[in-house]
Structures are given as C-alpha cells and as structure tokens.
Image (tube, rainbow, N blue to C red):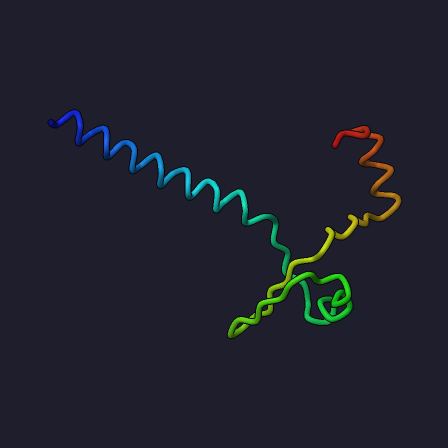
Length: 83
C-alpha cells in the first residue's frame, strides 16, 4: 500500500511540474514600454487588458530589433551571423 501512495504522490508532483512548465513557456517575453510608445503602437496591438495600475497588450507580430549601425557591425564582426 505504501508503494501505491508514493506512486500517486510522484504522479501529482509530475503533473504539477508539467503545468508550471507549460505556464512558464506560454508566458513569452515581456517588455515594459512607456505609455507614449504604447499609443504609437496601437495599430499593431492584437489584444489589450487594463489592470489597476498597468495596461498590458499583445502585438500581432514582434517588433524588429533595431540596433545602432556601428554596434551592429561590431557585433557581426565579433559573433558573425549566429541566430
């Protein structure tokens, strides 16, 4: 009987770990931006939720990463075109 109880406990812990793992993977990257930038991106926002002290939104597509051209050249020279 004790082995059966340990098996159930192990299964419960595995299920809890799996649920936490899925929640962690689904959360995605979050970036805090100023309200003025949020207003400028309104046409690219797919969904919005308003909380007491913040506004959270999801973009339809991620914004392209912009880097200073000189910095981009230095990074490319040092690291190549790695993803």
